[in-house]
Image (cartoon, rainbow, N blue to C red; front, side):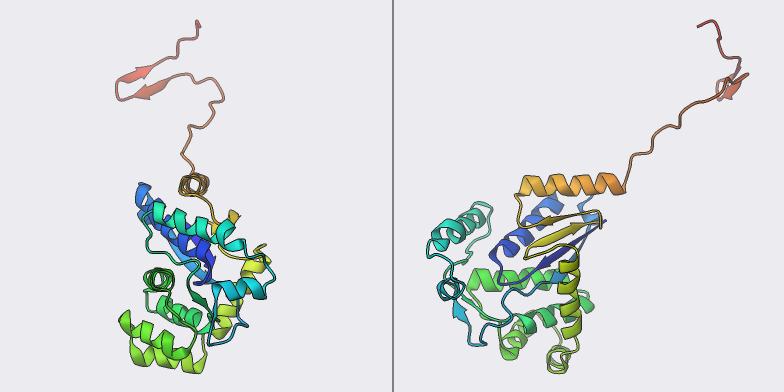
Length: 239
């Protein structure tokens, strides 16, 4: 079974859902048989490389200042309650994440995609890390032990740009209007963040549909007799 998870590393709900996915799969007896595939969904590609603060972005978007206390602080409190701390959804800088997503695609090709996605979420939300320039992203790659020459070539050549863009187009084709966006075994989608218990229930549903329990076949006809390890017998037709 697979879970496709579209997200952006500056999306606070996405970082929280990444944490919940880890928790959910750790609790499920078949969790090690579920493959999580991270896909890219850039939320703010037009932001300046220098970045803007979360409060500045709220103003730029024309959203009310109450967004901080009404939406973002509750995300921080939820993260803390679930053991994900520190988690900076407010006091941080946001910027374009194209280089970050291209590095994540490179890491995926190196067999380390899930690990590096989670580490990037933790770097941004745990440390308020800025990952908007190629240099910032390459420093992060080095800290993760990714090959410096390979990472540099991947970003300088921009050879993963098309894959990142294709990820976003596919999410939009499936109905996504934002992130997080999760697709469970290609059967159904969840647009947005959901709680841990609900997430486990959705995974269970997808697992049950893709791994149906074998059922006995319906019996038709009247048998003359049957043999078993205990011997042969004629069916009792008196009942």
